[in-house]
Image 1 (cartoon, rainbow, N blue to C red):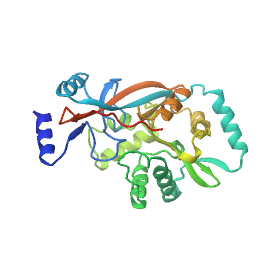
Image 2 (image 1 turned 180 degrees about the horizontal axis):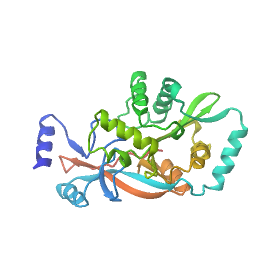
Image 3 (image 1 turned 180 degrees about the vertical axis):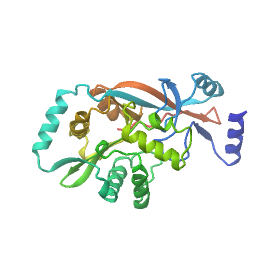
Length: 285
C-alpha cells in the first residue's frame, strides 16, 4: 500500500520511475537499503531489517546501484607502495598535506568547495556547491569534528584532495535519548571530551580532483593522516562510507589499503512501464 501510494502520486505528476530508499538531499546521508552488515548503523546511514530487501524486490524494484562501506583498522599495516609514494611527494615542495585548523574554517570551506566541484561534476544530476552552502556545511561540522581527522592535500597551495573523517557520532548520541536540548548537548560535549569507549571514526568524504588522480595522492593523504592519528592511540577502526559500486577507482583504493567490506546498501529503482529497458547507474570511467 505504501509503494502503491508513492507510485500513484508520482505518476499523477508525470514521473516514469521511482527510486528508494533515498533522502531528499545529498546522497551521502540516509540513502539506500541495508542488505549486508547488520551491525549498529553508522551516523546518517540507514538501518533496516533483512526482510525489507524481499519487500522491495517482490514489488518490482531493481538494483540501480550499490553503496559499499569498508572497514579498516587504524593501526593496520599500510601497503609499502603508499609509504614510498608519500615519501616521494613529501620530498617535492609543491605538495603539502595538512588538517583543518579551527580558526580558519572559512578558508577550508572554500578549499572543500573547490575540490567537491571539480571531483564530482561528472556525476549525473550534479549540482555545483555554492560558497554559502560550503560555509554552512563546514560550520555544521564544528561541534562534532576533531581537527586532526579532517585532511586536505595541496599542490602549489591549490587544494587537490580531501579526506574528511568524524568520530562515529552514534557512539555518543545513543546516550542522549533523542534530547538535543542544552542538557543533551552538554552531555554530548562531555562524552566527546572524556569518553574513551567509542573507538570508531568514519570517513564521510574522500576525493581527488581529476588532474591529480592516479598520482598516488589517494594513498598519500591517508598516510599523512595516519602519522597524526595513530600516535594519539584514541581510535581503533575507520569505516569508509558511501563508495558507489560504479566508482571502480575508489573501490580499488579501498582494497589496496587493505579495507574489508563491512556494509552494503542498495538504491533501488522501479520503472512504471516494465516494457522499457532497465539501465543501472552509469559507471565512472
